[in-house]
Length: 390
Image (tube, rainbow, N blue to C red; front, side, top):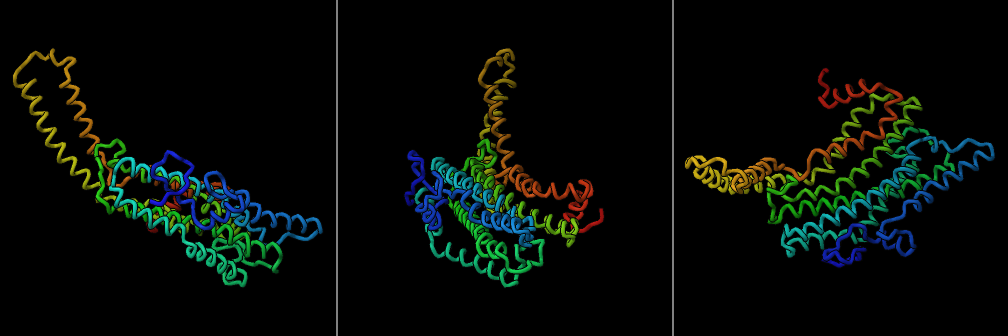
């Protein structure tokens, strides 16, 4: 595997997703941290700072601010979304690096088969053409907004009339929004790369052990990067909530209209975040039944011997006190119970609940001011049930 500076000289298998042409440019400009991830405040200042200065100038000369600045999603996207996306990148870098290290340290796969997967990911990560394509895409979206082909503040905009082409409008559409969208698109690209690793590893002969206490045959660490995905979902959900608040304030929409979209959003992020791990269903199924078959034979032999020794021979039962036979029988039962609790996916309910919680969290202030909680839950439940009557 290609050796990359990792900041951890003791790591025999360095791997990083926080590389690429974009990061190298930032490093030359001294705009990265020690972990080689971008400094969030730089992007916030560049994207939002001129909007703030322009609004102050308008206020000083007695003019109203640019209409686009009345959209709450503009400020949430730049002041909250950008820092959260960069934080999600730092978390993804740490979690993915740790997971790759455990793949090697735990000898789950032959390095000769694992290395090519990581080599391919590193080549994609370092591709200038991919990052250039992302940059062209966000610029094209910005131009389509500038010429009125899309809503001026994005897909979830609450302000339809952008007004004249003020400085604030031009700066946001041509500079600030492309910066925010590029960072989000780049993060999603890195998540696709990690998903590729997850799927690729599932196709290798894996040295799983079903009695591992993680109830995932030792592969539970593969779900660790989902915590970084949670942070990314929080950034997206906060931006959506800001746009919806703007629409509610402008009177162009009502809260129930957003429920189907929100339900679809929650289902989508759960699928994107946990979907790649579903390929391990056959892997864990085989591991569970393979070990159950072996332990079944071992348990049968042991309990028969235990029964013959302590039941059929009618020995003094007081001899059981302190004997290793009884403790071994209990330990065997515990191992067998662990086998029966092996999941078919390498994650429990917590990651799924975590994704849903962070998706819902930014919506709570919006809901609290417009709809009672019981009514909201009833509406969401009605949508989840496919429109069936309550």
